[in-house]
Length: 389
Image (cartoon, rainbow, N blue to C red; front, side):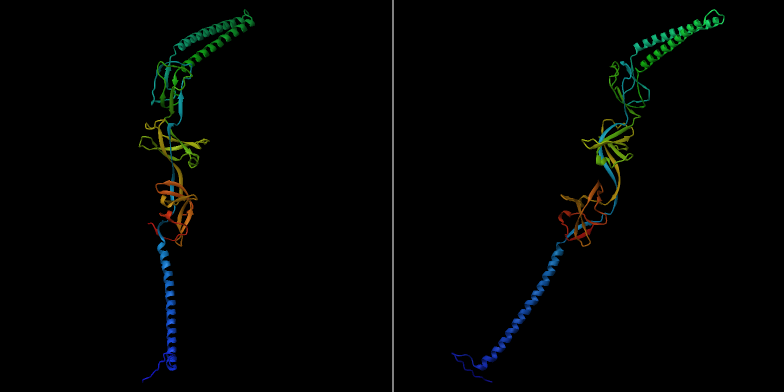
């Protein structure tokens, strides 16, 4: 079908053509606009959900992988290390007990074992010997006078029965006899005193033990003011004397075992605490623990030694040093909760041993404790825990 259209350059299209073509164009444009709006909404929804998933994935990717351990409870034998000196457990100083004089001979040397009462050194007693001899003679004279007085009294008693001697004469002779007997006792007492003084010139051991030092030589002039000539260890018993802080001293008990190693030696001696200092030095805040040791040549009084003391047992979680952190707020560890978030847990530490550090407060032992990398965590951080086997 052919249509003929007349176009007027100065006017609009004819009514038939312009009206039909305008409605169709408007409808098409509305449809296109609606399609574009729907496409934009779908794209926005898609990108919103995709962005949420990506954020979740990104957050999951940022969770730090940490190694955790469940420490449980371990029984640890507490130990305290101390240093000190070896000494005689009961040291006995021996000096001159008598008047003194010149030493004639020394019968023992340092390192010798002696018995109670054994003579260690002899002091010249020539003067004392003469005094003893003179007094012994006086005793004999007094005894002779006493015998004579007794004889005179006996004769007088026989004569008094016959009436030749009065009662007063008998009383006088009895008194003379008693005085003579008393003089005998006085003379014998003086003789005994001189003998005792002479005996004290011998320097003797007060008890059995080991001679530690000797400061006496033949020809030496000594007196009661000469000081210690011999020092002895009673029964050869030794000890180690160690100074400890009062906090450590409070953890020990009499009877606790100890391992003692003298300086320069590889031998270990078994000892036992026999005394804890009843007082604390106010300046150093330390006390002395005394460890009894058996005699041995390697234990030389005055030498240094190191002791490891048993301070009881404790049952608590034990962690390696890497798990325990500290800052200005104190000591703490990181614990991973059931939501896999790091939690700061304050703790109190105790013994340090080859097994690790004992945690005496803050943990039960059933928690998951961050073993390493705790310094890179903050409370509340999400983590991926890996239990150490």
